[in-house]
Length: 600
Image (cartoon, rainbow, N blue to C red; front, side, top):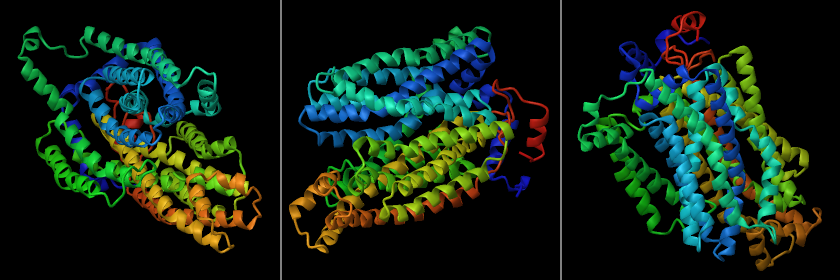
């Protein structure tokens, strides 16, 4: 049903009022946003081509890196004879991966898009150089932790650049195309890793070193294109350049202004809140758990985070910040808030079913290692494919996105529910179908919720809105993975013991080994009809059931949340709040009439 104009929430009305009462874009926008719009206005056809080549190259390198980095870290820590330390590295990385989103969003807004890519490249190079030259596990960990900051920055930078330079109509397709490299690298990643770390191969150090070199030509084109566009816009007077007298102002005054624009104090309190609240969850419950819930440090960290850091962050953002890292009016925008809830609970539900999927399939089937790897990547392939399909359809029909989002989330719920059947009937068709269905729903839901949140805010807020949605997804992944890991470790030994004792098998040593190595069942009891192997299947199936129940319940929340999001058509506009083109100019014609009449 069409939403009446009066039903637009207060945040959306405030956005429109703020835009209409602003005399110039520079009054409303921070420097990074203004430079992005003016660069688009001056660089012409070849500049546009260079930009998209840059986006393509950076996306390729991001996808390649994403598919190999974890394996190299595993080999490296094994070579240092300290594989358990990799758990601590992954704990820190998971938190920094989330924190990098708002950090780079503020850099892109307060300083500039090109400068944010430079920061990302710096962290990539520094991290990989340290890792490649690491003499011990400590240096390796430092390098990988620095690397993940650049990795997180590149992810959100590409998404924001796409939002800057595409209209709502094209945005879904272009964002999906950045993941299309996965179709090529799906097979190549494994081959690259195998060739590097195989006996007699160059080794994992060469992998890190080669990637450090590769990132320079991968990010160079987009950095140079953006810098050239910004420079040309300044020469043409489209971007205000401070007068010489203004540039001579005290450095202290300039530094304080930069701190205000970047909201460094807000970043500090946000980082402290996320670290103190979510790191204990990872340390005690995640797949890289190094502590237990009984450890005194766990509740102490969570209390400090919830009672001290989080209230301090909220107070600063509400009362003191000039340019808040998370403007709370964004969270009053029903579309942005809905997208955050969709992504958070969808990722919690997803990781509840996915985090231990490899172990479940390894123990309950006789698939080879390569087949298991292909299977666990099936959903990712389907996510990419169906997101691309949605993007193509958006271009053709310019439809309203909301009900496609709601329908996709219902499809995803169906896929999670089908896992109840597949966990007991381990036929290939049933197992694969669950991943295909979840991938179909999840791919459309991810791209639709992101495009929706970006289209419902002014251009000034696009970077922050994108960061908040991606941050919600990352935190949902942390929670889902931690809960799945806790259930797996606590429930699996008992379920295996009960199931095996029912067939007269009481070898406690074997049960302990089986919990630690799911593949052991394939070699010890290869016959799936063997009573012992069937009992092992039952133990794993019952454990999976404990994760599927909350996954199904939580998968309903995104469906409900999506219903309250604003339903607008994907038209040729930067967003539906300001009604302007990509150069920042007000538009006229059909799209303007549709917005003003409430038909968008």
